Image (cartoon, rainbow, N blue to C red; front, side, top):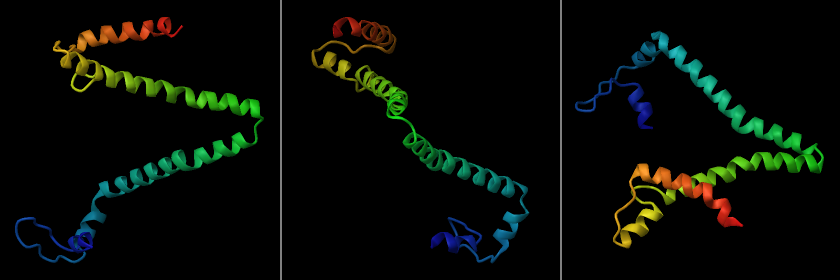
Length: 135
């Protein structure tokens, strides 16, 4: 409601705002950037609705028409990046300089925390050695 009132005023945060009627709208329609803004907003809205609403529905309909073996392969391909991103986020949390789990343990044992460069080397070495300990 306040935005509707301000739209018809020459807004001033310090002094009172005088009523100007439709002058703000006239100024807006005369400005050539306004139409570029509307075009960009329409484009962004159409693209975001298409990518976040219509595309998943089309994929779901497409998957419903497939054989079960193909659906399993598609699901695997769909969820592989999710698992890797979860692993990356967890490792970043472990090795964070400010609030990471490993630095917290080192500090609680009266050791100095790992600096960023050392964390990169240690992180890569630990990630490379994980398959060895998995067996």
